[in-house]
Image (tube, rainbow, N blue to C red; front, side):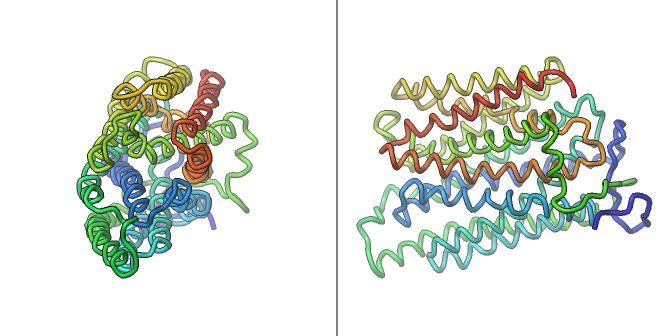
Length: 430
């Protein structure tokens, strides 16, 4: 049940209404930046986890992409219920619930690792992602509302830069912890009890890392709970049924939701295979353990681009910048496919720079003028993030069918072409 428009008390959550004026929340937007950093870092850890589990369980590319499928499927399943939860309990209480769910998902890595069971890893990832979805349903619209409407594009891009900081730092640490021993032991040469013992030993590094994350998330959840009454004057528009689906009838919002689906799918597809791609003889020809750290370049490019983009979006049309970046991503993919060596590797890594402003720009362009329906819009956008489940799985299947990763990268390029079209379509204000 949505919050009643005119009923509140001193202890009830106070969801913000978009009035077009900045909301004074005591510097709360700076606290939101920390949430972006955490869920960005946790999401990017999948790019390190995939080659790890691929080797441990001798998976093909399609099976390995089940990691992303189970993680991002949570967006399709939890997105709308998450927005309903936020409308009922408020932004800050909703964020606390999401963080506690993330902590539970991290703790599930302990039995998954000790039991050396791939299906349990997938379950842990789904629970973890469910919490991430709820936190994102809170964070994206809240950042947009905590300041003037005219700078919402820039502010959300700046917040996404902290998301990229997490996606840069977390994989660097994860690669050092998780991938080191892959160069020493080939699981394909083991069988029976020896294989099980090896998987359990390798899984120890996994569960210890996620246990540390659970502790960190727990501390953040406590801090968010202490801020639960900070927002004042919150209102959400009541909705029935599948909240927000009627918004898809608006051309701008519907096209934008599709592009979120395609963008996340393209970004995650490239991030998921890039370690294996760099290890190809045609590219760098080095083992995954030697090139694993380079995933940080991909995500680091997005971080640098978002800091730059937060300035550029104040000066130029967000739609035009989106179209230019999408075109740049396509050209870099083509360059990588038709070259070799360092040029092939670094040109694909540079796609991260082109990705930089895409999510926040598509989100803010699609959600312009939603007003008190911002939570509904955010819920639908988060459902669209399930592109990270479907497109990487399709990319993995293409890699298995064609016998390599090169042809499979054409699919992300097609996604970027459609995103460029949205940039042209939405170049003018709503």
